[in-house]
Length: 98
Image 1 (cartoon, helix red, strand yellow):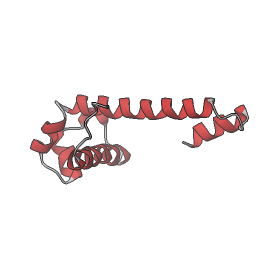
Image 2 (cartoon, helix red, strand yellow; image 1 turned 30 degrees about the vertical axis):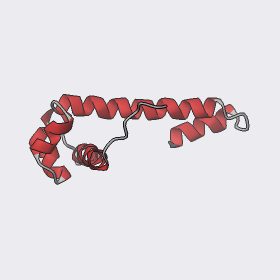
Image 3 (cartoon, one colour; image 1 turned 60 degrees about the vertical axis):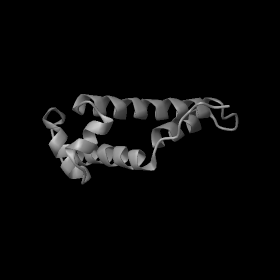
Image 4 (cartoon, helix red, strand yellow; image 1 turned 90 degrees about the vertical axis):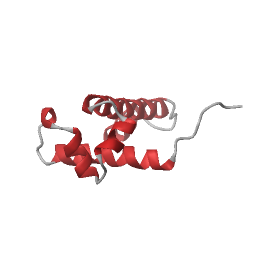
C-alpha cells in the first residue's frame, strides 16, 4: 500500500499560479534578482500569506521550479532512451522540442 499523500488541488493550483507568475515576470524582461514575494503574489493574483504557506522565500520558489523542470527533463530523457523505434536523431529532436 502506498503511503504517498495526494496534494490538495488548491495547493496544486496555487503553486501553478506562482510558477506561471514567475515565468510571466521573467518574460517581461524582469530581472530575476528583482523578483519579490509581493510582485510574484500580485502577478499570480494571490496574497503573500498564500505564498508563505508553500515557500520560505523567493529562492525556495525558484529552487522548486528548477527542480521540477530538471525532473521533467530527466523523465523525458529516460522515456526517449528506451524508445527503441526512434533513431538517436529523432530522440534528440523530440527532447529539444520538449
